[in-house]
Image 1 (cartoon, rainbow, N blue to C red):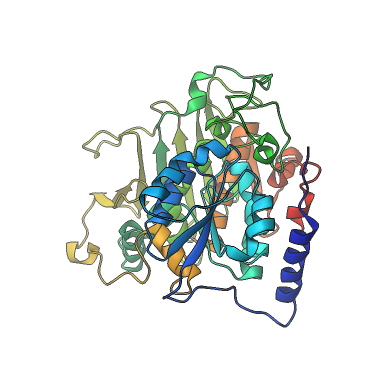
Image 2 (tube, rainbow, N blue to C red):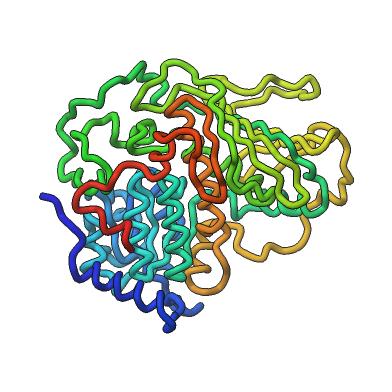
Length: 453
């Protein structure tokens, strides 16, 4: 049975929106340093479970609710909570019911669910004044990112995307190297990620699966959320959803936020003007991401920073040619940042620091100095921000444009073409189908309201 957003919850959200939209603007509630932050966990297995454990380690956090479309997937967390002598938390299979019944007891929530479901959960939570930690990528489509950035600003809640390295010393190093002129005049960045993806072994997919019996107790309707509800199949859940255009964002959504976050932020890349599908590795499919690809993004000049091309490589052992000056093997992930004519900086993902691999720089200038202004643990940074003590390092105004770059890359992969993009109007100007994909499919009946919050 389909279940729409309860009238009470929708009215609560609408009332909050009206208050914030008028002159009586109040800050979102935040616990004092001596109080506890009541956190709900939405998505309790895989990365969602990891996020839950990170939140549970914080001394100022109470876990007050667990929500997963398969309630049995909360069992491991429940056992760990018992070992920590934490109070029992009620279990839900529908985030809407959780907010209906417990909204007043929840200050914040973690959202560790498939890409396509980030948006409705996040929009409802923000509209109800809840602080949110959302796994990467921020959302499934370009427009959903746009709406989530607007909601962050509108509802004035702490919002964090889960690219954990953005709270590390790697981020501080990149920022300082840009400020000190070690990373400068960047016209070219090559980045690669060759970790095996589940869909590599599927062969050429031309039809959706016919379906199998879902796990006992699974709320498949909530899993599908705003998207078309296909028959349940293990090629969607658990974990395989990432390979499908209809539900996931492929390798870009999975690894792009870890590989290019600091370069995008501190080189002020913004949005590209051209996105080129230079190579797709076979097999390709109208439904599933390619086995690998080479996608190039052209970014225009920004102030005194030159135009820059970022070239992304993913797929089995698919990477740029090894430069003659590079001594070691390129490995399965990495990036080269070409700084002017003489210096090349190599980096990785997450907490990997950067190294100068070509050219000479002042070693003293290259040392990371000073104390970090915010926590260098990503979840702690979010919890402290929700308690009013610091700012989120990967807030949506930072993570949103980064994710939008990857959604453009996903469209280029899907259509195997070159896209011309206008960063001012935020439209693809040379391909009507691609421009439609910025918005994505119309929401499923009963799920339209999340686009109105």
